[in-house]
Image 1 (cartoon, rainbow, N blue to C red):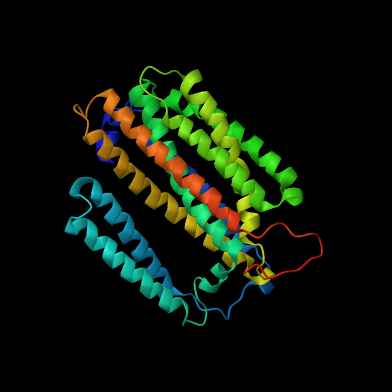
Image 2: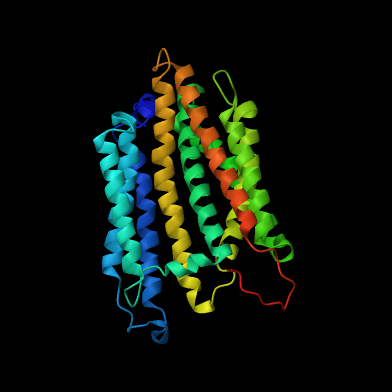
Length: 327
């Protein structure tokens, strides 16, 4: 991944010593966290369950296991997939996660009740969340580098070029919100996911010599509408067929799958892009960089399309008043 991003090293350095630099954007999280802590402290006392023991062992195991998987995938870029530094973290991470699954079935208050994944809608929503975040996060990375390295945009122009994606996402969310009760989450996830995958694939067809209008605006609008609609339906699908008291755990599970998908997706697709670029006759050329970005974007589109098709396993929307087990 580092070789793909090498050309952006100059963009990461502030142009003037007095400017705070790109790291300053991380500070936006500080007031959000402080507000969250304040809001949590204002919750009514009867909503706090003091009889629940924190699953510290499960938290440590899942964090270590997923971190090792991400490390192993990242090492494949420089060491190769068969190298001990790649296979070692992957193997140990897999073992740690297997232990985590065993622990979660035995502790009285598990971090995650794995039995929730027996519900088809819950499983499909989590698989979709994993794959869409894996593809989307990697796509943002590749598109940003494409605009700077291939099209010659500076950092400010690159940020502004993402505005159409934001507007398209809002439009997709609005449409999904209005139609969710009528068509159900499965239809929106499948249709929205495939539309989003089409937009990502369109990004992957961009190359040297392109322009914002020809290579960025169209795919931004298509991908964003599909992805925005999908995010609205994903939460609804995740809570389908589960008891109300499990809604919080299911939501947390979905967010965890998304975060893990983003980390693994960026590591895996970044390695793919770097490999494609490194195999070119001149890896430092704009053409080689563009080919790497295109490979990563097309793979991201494939992940999103696979997630959308997996959502066909979600039970069809039921008529009002009908109750049925979704497992």
